[in-house]
Length: 132
Image 1 (cartoon, rainbow, N blue to C red):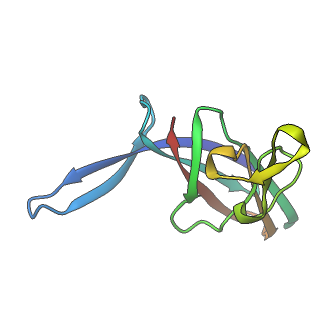
Image 2 (image 1 turned 180 degrees about the vertical axis):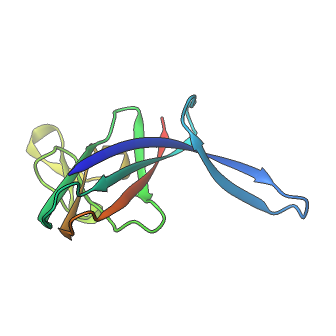
């Protein structure tokens, strides 16, 4: 299995009619507040299908998770790299042994599960984020 990761910055522009269009450009420079997209491209380079694939992507501390990328399955999220699930089910420990509901700012790991990738098969997964 070959996996490659790329980061893009969302760029917004007005067309002649005044409508806003969004495009992606390689993230050669980004500043706080920029919307970015992380893309994981995968390819089965072997001669046999692969099954039960798990792709994990750490979320850097300077990034806030926003949503799955366009056309991407919703990933499982984690605040600690151990427990994964939908954001609504995650909790963050607080002082005194209590906990609070996790927010997108707490997400530190993203995981996708792929049932099967046929020999020569490929695909990509993505998530949207914002630079803190």
